[in-house]
Length: 304
Image (spheres, rainbow, N blue to C red):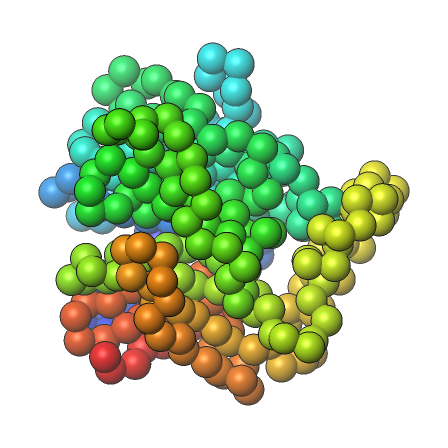
């Protein structure tokens, strides 16, 4: 979980560990790091959100890693705890999500069971080392994608099964609107298609009509969320979440969708038996669509 992998033509070409400490090979700790969303920053560097350490860049040729945003450090009264995804406006300016400022990737589940509105979206200027808060009080901010107009981005709010659009330029500058609502699953990362005419939505957990869905239920009952978050040991919450989202214990329905740039669903991809599930991201190269999971170590693809 603390490594970055370069794959060329379907083969692993290089692995770079953020930390080589023995304990880091088992689970993320504050010493290890946990890379999540990643983008190309320029010809030499990629930038990635680290769910433990903050925001960093990596040079795959040299293996050099540089931490830009340090988790826990105070930036104008704000501190980042759980950097989850990032997108690049230009070589100096990026946008990224902080899923919850209370927890990090080593212990994210209390934010789920507590239904906490502690997610944020920031703009960061690399040159000036300036962090600007754009969106606040989100129910687990997750994937982020700048739209082709270069004036707005969309961002997943995982717990509410919703996607927002934020305008950072133009006549609507600074405003937010609901882009997609009542999705058939809880969204993780968002990525533009290779032709930039649509985008892919990875659904981390499906919302199947007629079936019990724990997150939706918890959002209806604030008192239960408060009890779970304040009085239930967080280790138990983690165990419960992992059990019900582990395909070895139950068939977790796999689901992903494609939507146009207006937020209208174009098609969906289903894996009822859970062969492909717990989806974190979809990316296409024009010929194949690639699926990856946040819970299972696989990369799958289908031909478009």
